[in-house]
Length: 235
Image (cartoon, rainbow, N blue to C red; front, side, top):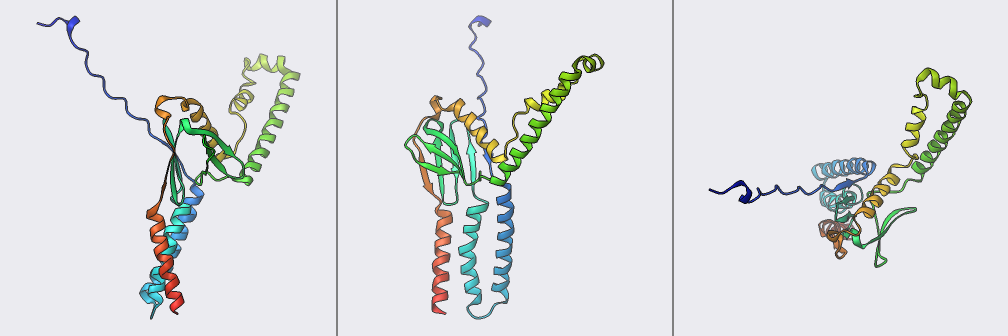
């Protein structure tokens, strides 16, 4: 009989892989769905009720427009995992291991820059100058409010502290702990930079950058464009 000291340890359950963080543009998706619905509605109506070459022109137009609208609105997404950043742009899919990311740049567009110097735009994380200005105004108002609150607390600190047990500064402290007000896409870039800093040197985050063309988008769009051009040229 085997003693407990000589029993083999029970196998440990596998550690589940963490899911990717997915970043998409809700406004882009909403606009794309509306445009797709409009194009399909007009196109199907032309196919059903049209005469002569109209149904064929409508079919060619839908074959050309639907992939392009979906590519620029619904398709773009950024998948941030523990080992790599996968960027799904309108016509390409770029996979960049964290070890190959030189920087994540924000200007008039958000980009990932690789160690080789290549730049890839993050289509699903668009820069909104309007949102940045709005966030800056909110931050200025919050900072001014915190300054006034600290001034009042300094003038009447002893009196208010005796009544509230020292809790009068809790609201201001909580506001300060929230950090500066930022636009949503800037918050996304901050999250990606934190992940880059944490995972750039990991052994599993090394590798080569790969770029794949989205032929499932390019093929139908090119075919529809050629067919539409031929139909319009024939007249």
